[in-house]
Length: 239
Image (cartoon, rainbow, N blue to C red; front, top):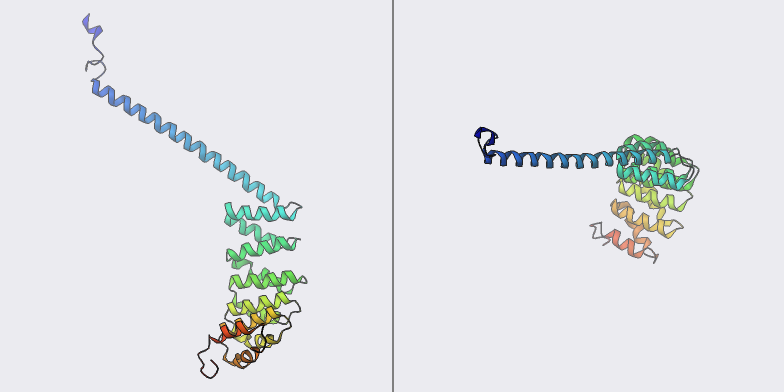
């Protein structure tokens, strides 16, 4: 029977040669798609597993006895899971290490996490000067005007760094109400505090401070800063 030995290209048996070529290409294409999907899927699953392990490890290490490990874990969370990092940083505000608390405040300030502000403000009354200073600095990053009354009180702190940071923060917050207190610090014992006061008064354009600034020109350690500050005033009587 010749019917049993029809050529492969016969349309009565397997379809045309052209049809076979199209089917072959389609199957090959499908195979490549499946392979690619498998590779991508494997990579996604692997990445998910790695990220999940990183999250578990980082959150576990937040309870590590070593402060450096806890700090490192916070920063790993910031890079990989910012929202989880905020939650972790809030908890770390109660950490026993002042360095961990400082890092936690910094993370929250950078994230502008206003929910953490009430807790950060409490550090203004901390017995540790470094924490009081850190709190003032962080409130500047928050640009928290509600903290102005408390920060004004810090201008009288015995710690040089706290007075310095308080001046800088009040100037950043455009706290004109603090001008009288800042003006007094032109006579501070620390030159850095005096110069910070000069810069702040210039930034705040405190015209009432002009006589005091002029007088400060007698202090050679302040002259450069005073001259620069006076440029903020368009007052021909003095400039």
